[in-house]
Length: 248
Image 1: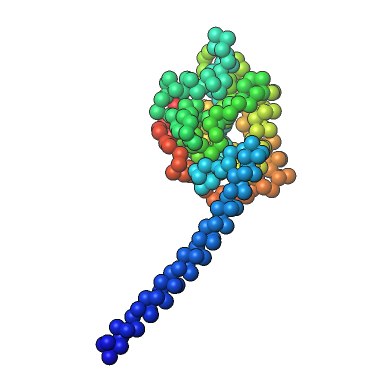
Image 2: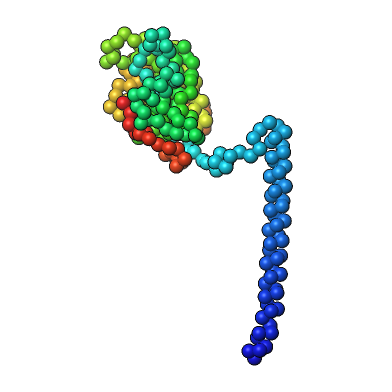
């Protein structure tokens, strides 16, 4: 009986080898098909002048949408010695005065704590990318920070201008908030002042917050997408954080 068992063993080994070969053959066919598909994508994208294949990080990285908006003022004049206080200048100031606020996102370092800056003439400038964690309000840095340039509180004794948001700034602010509310499904009740998140007067007692909020609520009434529920409010691992919850 033992000899009979040894005679059958080579047959079983042969069948196993054949099964493995069939599996490898099927796998080779699948790999060939995938290679052909990817090759056609590469050729097509090159013909249209686009990168052949998006970087793996761009394909796989997912960033949560910002759940709200925090409104700020720069607590400064519109210009200092003729130099505008704008997104570029604020980035330099934050780099010099608060280097620990720096955040690296998608390979670039951002010093400015805000996501948007609105100049006195209504120009809207970009600070940090929308999905990059901010550095503008403790515990609310996953929210978008919008800075309106000017000094809007009587506690600031300098005669800085603008001392109230200009009409152009308010028009741009409302339009920007409306766009962000629709894009990221932000309820108007999630549009707060800096002073609503910590002990500060920012954006200032001369900032017409409730008038702005009234406009945004009227917009939300006509745009149901602003009331969509939020599923994530925190930043994800690919964002490098440094001092994100430290702010003046």
